[in-house]
Structures are given as structure tokens and as C-alpha cells.
Image (cartoon, rainbow, N blue to C red; front, side):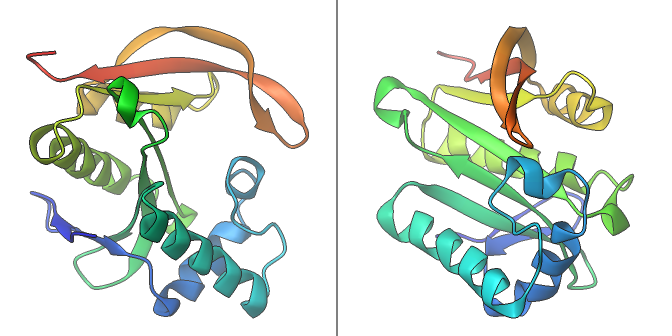
Length: 176
């Protein structure tokens, strides 16, 4: 799995056990554990299990889970590129940042770096992501990176035990 850098000085790298504090902070968020596999109740064992799942995804070729690392070396979030549908010419992305990093556009920089790599290096013609209609910050992040809103998928995303609506976004390679 590669290490990527952003124009803003951030690094994207694979998960490591030193990222347990990032998992702990994410588990305290009201939203992140509802839509990801981040444990809702943090313990060291649950944090290690989460990181091991990320290693497994990379090892099996299911995708590339990157940790976003700030200039000072602090892990602040993640961007995942998921390859389940790559044989059909598309892949999906997901991202989150912890509250202490919100408002610094680290999700935008990380997402843009993974998009460039997926399109330019891996040659994936279509990238997709889903964003909840009320998640204004994430909507803006996707749009600033160049994703286009395509529509509303009703009852698509499981959140806290119920299906919620999401906007679907796509990023198309210029020659696709």
C-alpha cells in the first residue's frame, strides 16, 4: 500500500497500532461509529480489532484504508478507497475526521489525494461516494474535490439501526 502526500503537507499512510488514539477519539464522536466499523465503546481490544480490520482490507485487496496525518505527525482521520466494484469500472470512497481536526480541510486534502491516485495511477474511471443530506461539511468537501451530485438514494445508508437517505456523488475520469 502506498504512502501519499497532499499539496497541503499532509501524509496518507496505512494504519498502524500507533493510531489507537485516533480510533479512541473517533469512537467518542456521535456519528462516526454509526456509519463505520469504528467501535462505539472504545477499549484497547476493540481499537486493535478495528486497525486489524483495516490491515485485512488492504491485504485481501478489498481496498486501501489510509490514515490522514497532519504536518505535526498527528493522525486526524481516514480516507478509504473500496474496490468491490472495480471490475465494473468504479470504486467507492469514504472519509471521516475527528472533531479536533474539523474545519481545517484535512478531509478535503486527503480525499483529493486519494482521488488523484485512484484516477491517475490505478486508472479507475468512476469514483462514487454517499453523503447524508444533513452532513453539510461532507457535502462541501465532496464538491470542492470535484464530485458531482447525481441524486438522492432513499433508505440507502444504515445509520444507528435504521436506513437513511443519502446523496450519491460521482467523480469521473476526464476521458471516461
